[in-house]
Image (cartoon, rainbow, N blue to C red; front, top):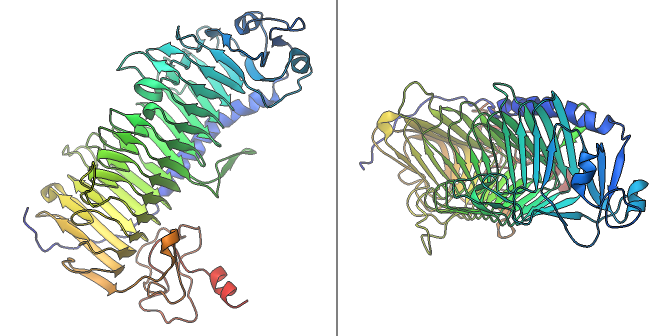
Length: 556
């Protein structure tokens, strides 16, 4: 590969993440009416299940078949060994009752009844065939030991509209029985044509120790899933989620996807259609989802394929990730994420996120490759307000740790307001290849406290840099407003990369990008610190802006 002097290209980045917010809002507008209906539905025929004389039924299926609108299941000390079928029935199931007297009076407890599929079939088969709308709310249950090709724990199959919710449910030790199967824990599908007909809302679930097939949660055709609350998808022996074609998936903070091991692309997630990772709070019609104080966590996922954290392909629209922690993910290519050439182009925005301790042979954080097919738009990837630290181990151990980012074939990468520090990768931080097919890179308003060269590109690649505080500016192509020095972080040993008052990154740059208008802490950009003259303007470099709150604290 021949190193060349690279030309600059003009840019004024817009806040592409707003497109993601629109997608999230549209998803909530789709599911909130279902949640409202479930909440406002009067329970007129509750049926209790347990092994006491006062219980209405001894089996859950018997209560369902008897026409209950709510099945109240007691914790009888041993599992219910059943494979449940719910077809054309609106019914809810609750498992947090100590005995049937409490269940009759709707006195809830902290217990969870256990339903065991005996490795005989799916534990739940929920479907619609002959009705227009079906609601099924499942809460406070442990669902275990189901086995099926697709959906060892739960299958949701829809010929018409169906909405299911899982609240405080544990899915464990369920199996997809075929190597090409999907959804060892949950499988959702719709046969209803062009409209989204099958909908699932998951909140405060533990989905762990499931195995087999290609994913833990998956589906096919026209479905939506929203995952919320303290849901944890971890320690499964396949990738966590496969968001297939014609699907809509929204993940809210503080959901955690961790410790999953996959032998196909995507250790944590594989994304094929409309997906948003929304690590903040959003309210719609009185219902609130997500958290402003905790991130989505994608950590310690591993694949023998590509994309340790996330594998992305076949997208036809924007993808937004906000406030996501990628830590300790590992893959052959793309430790944190891999964006494949099969995507039809589009914008990818990763905002206010944290990348740490990810590893790969190539692209410890990301591998980005666009399609050579000119009918598709190039990939346009923006990473902003991110802390990127301690990725790679200098090639020691199982991975070569070449580069933070590898870019190839009709792809643009824009790094804006990032703090890049203490990574241990081999080679330059960014390698751009196959520049003759259009590979463009920009690094703006960032702190790059690394000994490595920042960029290396093949003939025809374009590179632009402006407003950087660097440890090493050697071999940097044409750039503007570069300073070499120490960033003066508050406590880097403890992972605090906020700026001290004497940092040269303060008030260094003018307004060269429209977005993001706030920093990683949601502090307004452009605070003019009064004790330091502007170098080129009032905008600080890196993920964090020195705020007026910090200034006020200094003088209390």
